Image 1 (cartoon, rainbow, N blue to C red):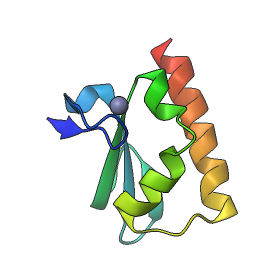
Image 2 (cartoon, rainbow, N blue to C red; image 1 turned 90 degrees about the horizontal axis):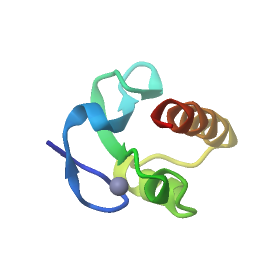
Image 3 (cartoon, rainbow, N blue to C red; image 1 turned 60 degrees about the vertical axis):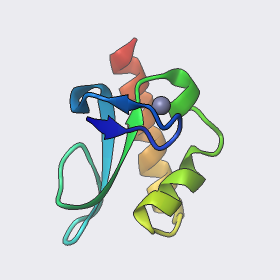
Image 4 (cartoon, protein in one colour; image 1 turned 30 degrees about the horizontal axis):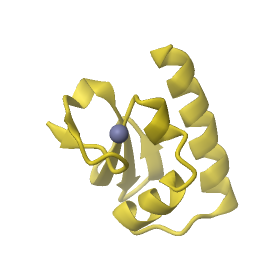
Length: 83
Ligand SMILES: [Zn+2]
């Protein structure tokens, strides 16, 4: 069970989008080794306007434009998938 960084509820791993600050590859989604954060598949959470700030805090990363671009693409495909 993992905690969603937005609603703080616990979910099974398979119901969460995993974002990892991988030691070698940087920020990657669903795989990777390193500090990770999870977002549940509730629209309220993944489309939260504060979600990027929460991620930044959880992963201890800076919000580079490249990261935001990738993140928004991932969220879009994630939301398409859960619908
Ligand atoms: Zn959530």
